[in-house]
Length: 121
Image (cartoon, rainbow, N blue to C red):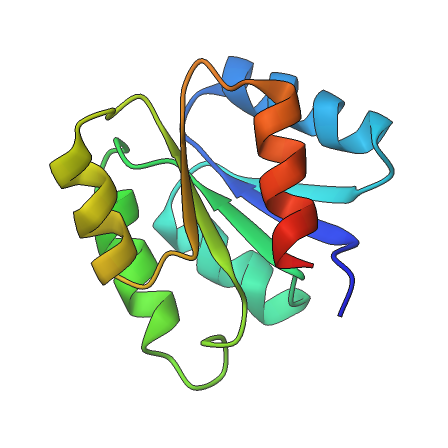
């Protein structure tokens, strides 16, 4: 199934703007959420083909949110790509164990992110 719609979950308005702009210019339909609550609300309104997930957020962090989504039968088929400044190998491994399909670090390399999205879809 080709990826057309992406939900970006990040508490940074700047990051949301940069990623939305990048994905929008590359033909993706983009919706954003700034926290776990908003992310679940957006998921219930319309399922995206992919979720780009920040890790460091107030309240529920991206690892916890990824685990919650990956374990919810309603949403478990949606691939999640962690998109975070946490660049340690242990963070990457932990993110994948929570259910993420892939992992990119900030600052995001546009070509790397787009090729990872294309590889999933």
